[in-house]
Amino acid sequence: MGLEHVPIGIGALFAGFGVLCVFLVVAGLPGTWILISAAVVIDFLDWLWLPPGSPLTFHPWTLVAAVLLGLVGELLEFLLSAAGARKFGASKGGMLGSVIGGVVGALLGTVLIWIPIVGTLIGAVLGTALGAILGETWNGRRSLRDSAKPAFGAVIGRVVGTLSKLPIALGVWIMLTVAAFR
Image (cartoon, rainbow, N blue to C red; front, side):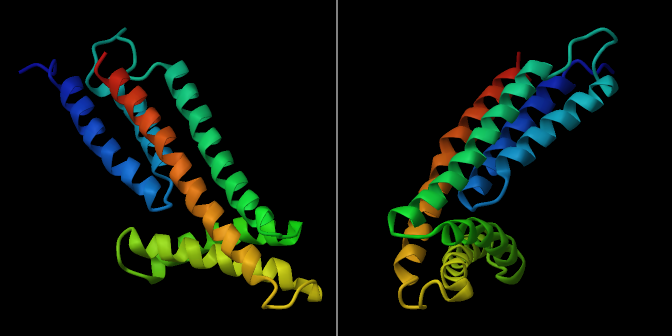
C-alpha cells in the first residue's frame, strides 16, 4: 500500500481547514496566522509521506509571501482602528487605548462569552470602546461624556479594520491552497 494519495488528502484537508480560518478572521481571531502555522507544520512533516528529494508542499517563498500578507492585514486593522478614533476626535491616548482595548477585549470575549465568534466580536467592540474611553479620560484629559464620540469612531474603525483583513485572509488561503495542490 503506497502513500501516493496522501498529499492530495492533506491538500484537501488543508483547504477545508483554511475556510474555517478565514471565518475566524471575521470573528477577530488570528485565522490567517493559524492557517500559515498549519502550512509550516505540514512542511515540517512532509518527510512522513513524500518520497526523499521531493519538494516541500509549500515553497518557502510562498510561506514568506503569506506572512507578509498577514502582516499587511494586521497593520491595516490597527491603523484603521486608530484612524477611526482619530477621525472622531481622539487623542493619541484614545487611539492607543482603542487598539490595546480591542485586542484585550477580543481575547476576553472569546473566553468569557461562550458563543463562538459572537463572543469574540462583542469583546472586541466593547474593548475597543472602553480602551478609547480610558485613553481619553486618563489623567483628566476629557470627561466621560466627551470621550464617547472618539470611542464610537474607534469602534467603527475596528469593524472596518477587521473587514479589511478578510480579503487578505482569503488571498492567503487561495495562495496556500493552490500551492498545496501543485
